[in-house]
Length: 120
Ligand code: SF4
Image 1 (tube, rainbow, N blue to C red):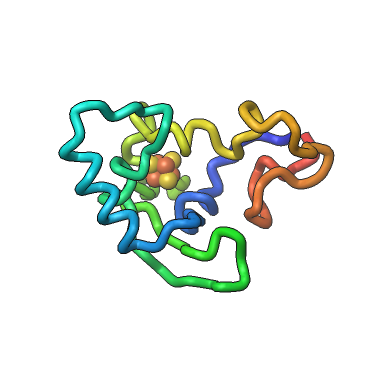
Image 2: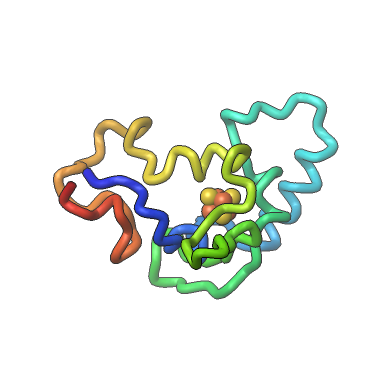
């Protein structure tokens, strides 16, 4: 499995199972809760970060978003403006530490050109 090469595909095209209306409802619900378990769900956290792009009903994760924290350094290199405190879903991408039953012999990232799909 390769590694993150900071190409920014995942941040510009965050793919989720949840539509924007559900993210918004969950965000407002969880914001009022006094017992948020950060390991259970980050939906309450990620809604304000995301800008909805489009839906593709043919995909398992049909809702496409762009992260508002995605930016570029002055050198032009893609960057995360909140990298030290980015959400768990970003730190864990592409999730294979937790999902050991998945086959990692082929491409592990859904993004063509992602560094995790490089052979190194
Ligand atoms: S928080 Fe940072 S790492 Fe996560 S999607 Fe946004 S720009 Fe990418």
